[in-house]
Length: 177
Image (cartoon, rainbow, N blue to C red; front, side, top):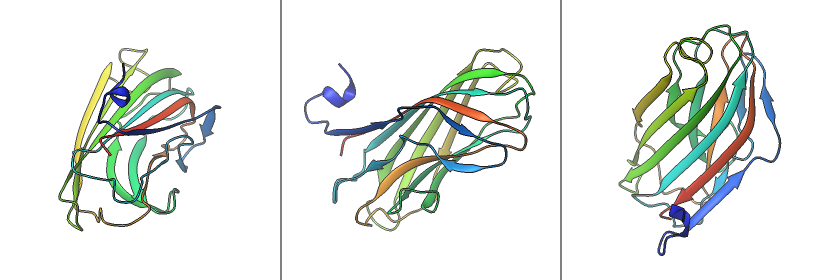
């Protein structure tokens, strides 16, 4: 039983249905990451979870960036809420699994904050996506306006110079709405 199945935990989800490739030095919305939040449903304690299966080519040695966004566009034009910058990569082909958890802390006003954590594990110990086998990044947002109607949560990726990423799976979930 998932958290979405528990009584009292109304949940929403989305997912990709095909691979998405993001070429070097490009910012793109991850297809399947958007979740339209019902009016009046965002609250302190709402949780968003994004799980990603991704591969990189043998090019690119800088860290890639993932950004949790909220806005009304469902595009890269929405407001950046939390930014996660991966550590230095190496020029080696690799596969990674990434989980990003976001908790809305509140208050539900123009002074709302969110806490986020990115966890990444990858196939290689000291090459590929990172020079360490497991990456954990914690980030606290600045303030943002949580009172905007018709909010859409999404995840954006900016690839580093020379890096090409292919996302085989993107799953987005939200609960406690």
